[in-house]
Length: 130
Image (cartoon, rainbow, N blue to C red):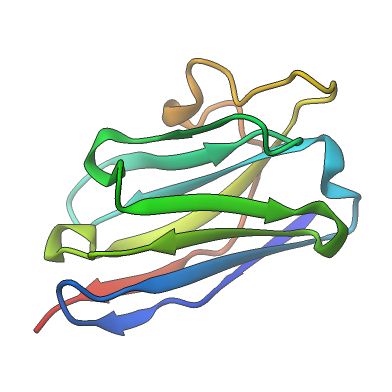
Protein backbone atom coordinates (compact mmCIF):
# COMPACT_ATOMS: atom_id res chain seq x y z
CA UNK A 1 0.00 0.00 0.00
CA UNK A 2 1.32 3.41 -0.98
CA UNK A 3 -0.34 6.76 -0.26
CA UNK A 4 0.29 9.99 -2.13
CA UNK A 5 -1.11 13.36 -1.06
CA UNK A 6 -1.81 16.31 -3.33
CA UNK A 7 -3.71 19.59 -3.31
CA UNK A 8 -1.73 21.59 -0.79
CA UNK A 9 -0.40 25.09 -1.24
CA UNK A 10 -0.68 28.68 -0.12
CA UNK A 11 -4.10 30.15 0.63
CA UNK A 12 -5.35 33.30 2.31
CA UNK A 13 -7.22 33.15 5.63
CA UNK A 14 -10.84 32.28 5.01
CA UNK A 15 -9.98 30.41 1.85
CA UNK A 16 -10.40 26.73 0.94
CA UNK A 17 -8.28 23.84 -0.20
CA UNK A 18 -9.06 20.22 -0.99
CA UNK A 19 -6.42 17.64 -0.23
CA UNK A 20 -6.42 14.29 -2.00
CA UNK A 21 -4.91 11.02 -0.85
CA UNK A 22 -4.56 8.41 -3.57
CA UNK A 23 -3.80 4.82 -2.64
CA UNK A 24 -2.08 2.25 -4.80
CA UNK A 25 -0.97 -1.32 -4.34
CA UNK A 26 -4.06 -2.65 -2.55
CA UNK A 27 -7.83 -2.26 -2.60
CA UNK A 28 -8.70 0.51 -0.18
CA UNK A 29 -12.08 -0.95 0.80
CA UNK A 30 -10.86 -2.49 4.07
CA UNK A 31 -8.79 0.46 5.23
CA UNK A 32 -9.70 3.33 7.50
CA UNK A 33 -7.92 6.48 6.39
CA UNK A 34 -6.93 9.40 8.54
CA UNK A 35 -5.54 12.86 7.97
CA UNK A 36 -2.95 14.20 10.35
CA UNK A 37 -0.90 17.34 10.49
CA UNK A 38 2.29 18.59 12.06
CA UNK A 39 3.16 22.24 12.43
CA UNK A 40 6.74 23.42 13.09
CA UNK A 41 7.59 22.96 16.75
CA UNK A 42 4.38 21.06 17.50
CA UNK A 43 3.42 17.43 17.78
CA UNK A 44 1.39 15.42 15.34
CA UNK A 45 -2.33 16.16 15.46
CA UNK A 46 -5.22 14.00 14.28
CA UNK A 47 -7.35 16.04 11.89
CA UNK A 48 -9.97 13.61 10.61
CA UNK A 49 -10.65 9.95 9.98
CA UNK A 50 -13.07 7.99 7.83
CA UNK A 51 -14.08 4.34 8.12
CA UNK A 52 -13.73 1.94 5.19
CA UNK A 53 -17.45 2.17 4.42
CA UNK A 54 -17.51 5.96 4.89
CA UNK A 55 -20.39 5.50 7.34
CA UNK A 56 -18.28 6.73 10.25
CA UNK A 57 -16.24 9.91 10.36
CA UNK A 58 -14.60 11.92 13.10
CA UNK A 59 -12.76 15.21 13.40
CA UNK A 60 -10.33 16.90 15.69
CA UNK A 61 -11.90 19.70 17.70
CA UNK A 62 -9.99 22.55 15.96
CA UNK A 63 -11.41 21.63 12.55
CA UNK A 64 -14.97 20.56 13.35
CA UNK A 65 -17.45 22.42 11.21
CA UNK A 66 -14.78 23.58 8.76
CA UNK A 67 -13.25 20.39 7.35
CA UNK A 68 -15.02 17.47 5.66
CA UNK A 69 -13.55 14.07 4.91
CA UNK A 70 -14.88 11.82 2.15
CA UNK A 71 -13.77 8.87 0.07
CA UNK A 72 -14.38 6.95 -3.13
CA UNK A 73 -13.13 3.40 -2.78
CA UNK A 74 -13.53 2.69 -6.48
CA UNK A 75 -11.11 5.55 -7.14
CA UNK A 76 -8.89 4.59 -4.19
CA UNK A 77 -9.06 8.20 -3.07
CA UNK A 78 -9.80 10.03 0.16
CA UNK A 79 -10.34 13.78 0.23
CA UNK A 80 -10.14 16.42 2.91
CA UNK A 81 -12.13 19.53 2.08
CA UNK A 82 -10.83 22.41 4.17
CA UNK A 83 -12.93 25.56 4.37
CA UNK A 84 -12.56 28.81 6.28
CA UNK A 85 -8.87 28.14 6.74
CA UNK A 86 -7.01 29.88 9.53
CA UNK A 87 -3.29 30.60 9.93
CA UNK A 88 -3.28 27.99 12.70
CA UNK A 89 -4.11 25.36 10.07
CA UNK A 90 -0.70 25.83 8.48
CA UNK A 91 1.16 22.53 8.69
CA UNK A 92 2.37 19.53 6.79
CA UNK A 93 -0.62 17.26 6.23
CA UNK A 94 -0.31 13.49 6.02
CA UNK A 95 -2.79 10.81 5.11
CA UNK A 96 -2.44 7.40 6.71
CA UNK A 97 -4.21 4.07 6.45
CA UNK A 98 -4.94 1.21 8.82
CA UNK A 99 -6.56 -2.12 8.05
CA UNK A 100 -10.07 -2.22 9.51
CA UNK A 101 -12.08 -4.99 7.80
CA UNK A 102 -15.78 -5.37 8.43
CA UNK A 103 -18.90 -3.44 7.40
CA UNK A 104 -19.27 -1.78 10.83
CA UNK A 105 -15.68 -0.90 11.43
CA UNK A 106 -14.65 2.56 12.52
CA UNK A 107 -11.34 4.32 12.98
CA UNK A 108 -11.31 3.34 16.64
CA UNK A 109 -11.45 5.54 19.71
CA UNK A 110 -7.74 6.33 19.73
CA UNK A 111 -7.28 7.22 16.07
CA UNK A 112 -6.06 10.74 16.87
CA UNK A 113 -2.84 9.33 18.32
CA UNK A 114 -2.00 7.86 14.94
CA UNK A 115 -0.25 4.82 16.36
CA UNK A 116 -2.64 2.33 14.71
CA UNK A 117 -1.84 3.60 11.23
CA UNK A 118 0.83 1.55 9.52
CA UNK A 119 1.09 3.29 6.17
CA UNK A 120 1.75 6.99 5.74
CA UNK A 121 2.06 9.34 2.82
CA UNK A 122 5.01 11.63 2.34
CA UNK A 123 3.08 14.70 3.44
CA UNK A 124 2.07 17.92 1.76
CA UNK A 125 2.44 21.51 2.88
CA UNK A 126 -0.53 23.77 3.60
CA UNK A 127 0.20 27.41 4.35
CA UNK A 128 -2.51 29.86 5.36
CA UNK A 129 -1.25 33.41 5.20
CA UNK A 130 -2.25 36.83 3.96
